[in-house]
Image 1 (tube, protein in one colour):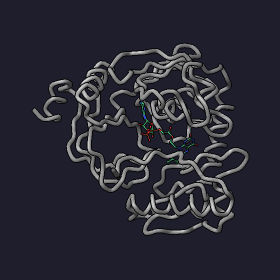
Image 2: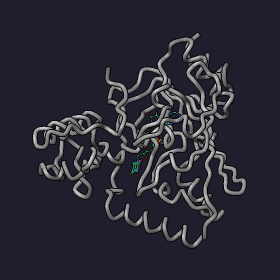
Image 3: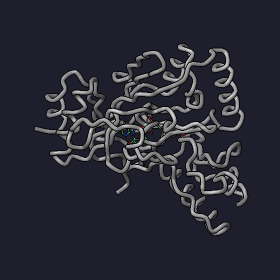
Length: 301
Ligand SMILES: Cc1cc2nc3c(=O)[nH]c(=O)nc-3n(C[C@H](O)[C@H](O)[C@H](O)COP(=O)(O)OP(=O)(O)OC[C@H]3O[C@@H](n4cnc5c(N)ncnc54)[C@H](O)[C@@H]3O)c2cc1C
């Protein structure tokens, strides 16, 4: 029996797709096809899917909104487990929000606003899912997931459920234990504070206006390509090398924000990856600093 049929038996109510163009599931809008994609509709179905894929040694990758991912043009030989809309419930109990991993950060931040809860304003413009945000310890404007997460419900790669308390996540800059232990994040419990709705709304508007002013939001991208090096800024180092606006094929160092590489319309993953390497090498020659990737590049071997 092939993997598609096995997955159908494991979860007949899940959406299962073949030969899926990953450019349609990532904000960079590049990348070849994944053999299979399954979109689970319950925590118990994810448990069974991950246990099956692990024990049969079928390569798999859990994704959320694809806003921090670049897939090679050759695609992905394996199964993409996309945690999205069917797992996006959000519940509010006083100052606690419990969100499933597929809920979008923007939706969760807006729910906090509706309930006059403060603490998630920083997240309202980050285009990721809750699962991806905890995995990355996503953050902006002095806020990060570490500050609001109380605990998460995760799966290990044998399909066992585990609960991690905040300090068990080993959160640091754009890093969490979920990366090290190859866990799947299913649900996130956050504690916020009671606030004033108009102040929360004003802060969100302010931060989103800053984003629109500084970031090339009119082009496909994966946000900041590089992590912030200690004591300086990636965008500044790139700009200092005269790389603003540099193009390879359809990939371009944004002329609005040099920490972003944008797809000007017809970029291939190869264009994007070649430009990333060119920027890393040029910055290294110029400053002695090697820019580490914030985005994850998938496939290609
Ligand atoms: C325009 C733009 C602006 C951005 N601004 C910011 C910003 O201000 N701050 C910031 O931190 N980031 C920013 N990002 C990057 C990105 O939005 C974040 O990293 C986000 O948290 C990724 O979430 P995602 O659901 O899209 O994850 P994906 O891109 O789908 O996946 C990212 C990684 O997380 C893993 N993953 C995803 N879901 C799960 C899960 N449920 N369980 C386990 N692993 C999982 C994937 O395997 C992958 O390794 C920006 C991106 C764009 C395009």
